[in-house]
Image (cartoon, rainbow, N blue to C red):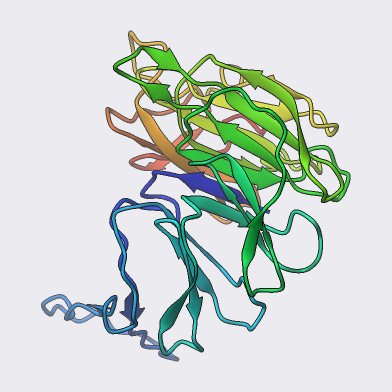
Length: 298
């Protein structure tokens, strides 16, 4: 399971949002490569045609009403998919969100990392905020869901960002799910300025680990989960700090886990606003994409 949210070209959340259609051609048998000019563009902007009004914001796709059609959460608005024919507003004013079923009622709920609120999904018809614990002041641009302590309920890792003018670093937060009722703050620390957070069981030991992409030439964090929701930063050990010579860290703006080379191990795609370099024993496949070594190092 991979859960991700970031301002990151690798993820489903980007700055400019458009709804596009893709034309695909399936062929069977031998394929001849013809030396011709590139095919015509196969994407068409249907934003307005489908009834959407979108701004430059983060977004996520999720079927909020369990009708089999992916709905769109973007710019604080939940857009319900009308069987692929168009979209209508279901809810608004929620902020930028990531989705998961926190109370195990089979409907996807929403966490707004811009307002630090969890919104319970009422059978796909509406969303209502739940009571949250008292939290330290935090400005966040990314968070992820994951069952970090293995109790069957998804928890939250929230990345803290910054107030640049005031010189403030906001804390990362770990919010543990209280059996689908609410959350409690298990941990917080204001060390670095996160731009993206993504969870994945990269070492395949049965629990979700967390990779935090930090900005301002600060080192990225690779949180190794002990299975009980306790984390140890092993970014340096696994060569996943994400830096360049002479600096403690990079300008990471997000990352995504994927098995890029089909060897059964999760690799890591990391996006920087500065130079991207090879990470230790992890072999670079493409700019910004690095391969997990056979011995499990990054």
